[in-house]
Length: 202
Image (cartoon, rainbow, N blue to C red; front, side, top):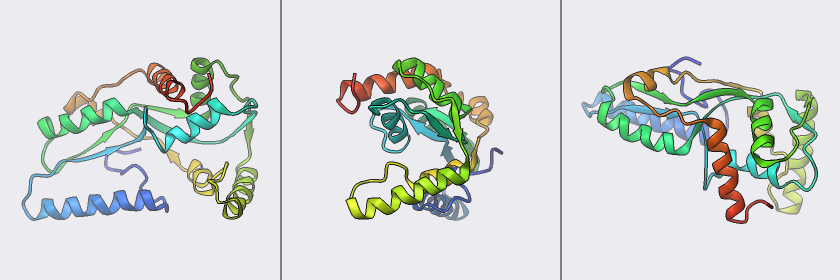
């Protein structure tokens, strides 16, 4: 959770590796004398989302109530705040410094409770043991190779859920005046956007 820890650091998925490689390239440019300010967004959500949005859409549009959830923790940040944070880093960031663009650290249970409140769907109350979640993900991911459809329970997503993804964005708030939008209001906006554009049922 330290300010110099890149979100996704240590994770094995290709997306996280690409982010780490991009940061290495940026540091090489810094060493060559270019003015470089580093920003690391935490877990971004909002309209047009293709990552966290999968969780949101699966929860809201499921024909049956979501009865259980895996243990997970994550730091969320609204996409509008991330966009503003990039501009603020360019305007106010100190050369060679890194800023975590984040907001609130929440357990998945808390996130689902907020989603339940803003979407009108019941929040799950039962936690799935990690071993059971990984087994379900293995089966779902294996079936996806047969059906040629994305797995309902992706292996990489469940594996990453076991990593504590909490981040400290106080440096960006202090030095960049990074906005801290209400997570509840931002999730409500995201749900409304997905509904308005036909991604989830009303």
